[in-house]
Image (cartoon, rainbow over all chains, first blue to last red; front, side, top):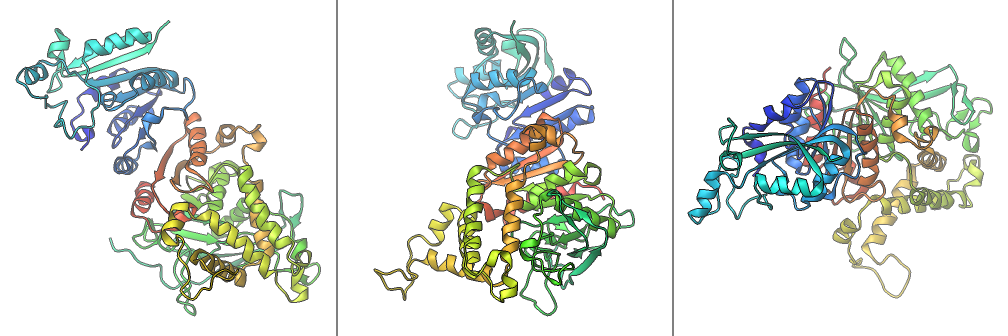
Length: 199
Length: 374
């Protein structure tokens, strides 16, 4: 029961925002696939993962992984410690939404957040038909989901504005990973944001 | 993959005639280290692993002795063919530290200057001194660079010190159930243990050998106290609870509760073979360990020179060296952008968990070590 076994269409987007030699902290790194990809591209990375089985898999995959619970915050990491902090498909599983966003932008120069867009048209259709959505990016039944927050791109952008977070870049993907260029909050299944601290 | 024992092993000794300068300013003119090896050193000499022992450990890390088949090495569940430290791939060296009482030069050895046991005259040794001595053994064995230096507790501290003192000679450090330095509480426990020994009438200021006695009562108390701190409250509750000995009387001060019986047994067993002076030295080495001290308390600055990659592990119920202490090491390494993985292993066994056969713990070590090139 983990998002990390899915094909990760957001990885290429995330990697495209980073340069060789930069450092990255991957929160909820799972088995460390993103870190492996970034390592191949010359970045230095560390992952944080809570699940023991995934920590073991990450160690098997030869990436740096630190077993820790994100809900406890990032207190061990210093201000501006990393060029990038990534939270890939994990924000919707966390209770302390604002705290983790603030912490990411404390320890990282900038942050990348990806999450399933609840306002994706298929999700809207499912709800219109009276059922909670189950899709490529929201693959869980309501009674067996790690997700605790359900929100849309507009919701996220509103929260960023409220927190004084600047959105530097945004890529929106449809279910098969193709890039969505218009009507993003309707046609986009997965949203990937590059964010930074406001003024 | 079948797991097995390294089988029958033979301890070896290496004598060193060049003096060893110690952190205290003293010097050991001539000294010996007892050690064991398992597996085969490859032609490139790139597959050597040094296993450092904790407070009461020694060089007998794995396997058993021909004349004493029940004397199985203290980390036999970790080291052997097909085990996490796979002796089919690696050449493993276990060593008894200076000041020990299992064959290496220590307080019970003969001081060449007097022809008598060193006793109280044996110099205080530190973790740095042990690393220096172990490096001399590595030289003698033709090992320029260790693939791994590893240990639990005080052994983990030696692994950490290796990466700082001799960064070119360690490729990977496995630091398990350790801490970057002792807390006041930890030093306090060690002091009580030492006081138990120092105030035993049969200690004779450390020169009990010439009186043909041993400070057994002090050693026993020291071990009992130590043992309490190596277990967890939960585990004690589960294993002993308030259970009483069937034969125990009541309304007296005899052995009544099972936990008392257990501690007495552990204390007696330990006091029967361990050297009191060695116990004092080992606890003092623990107390002095603080690699950050020379860097204004900045652990990251101390570790900045390390070139090794690190695997750090802690155990959830270890309150002697809690997970938070391991996180201090992890945080310092991350701050330096050094390679580190950290496992916080759920275990009921307290500090002693690092010696236990735990599937997840061993799988973690195995996974990390499997990726090490030889």
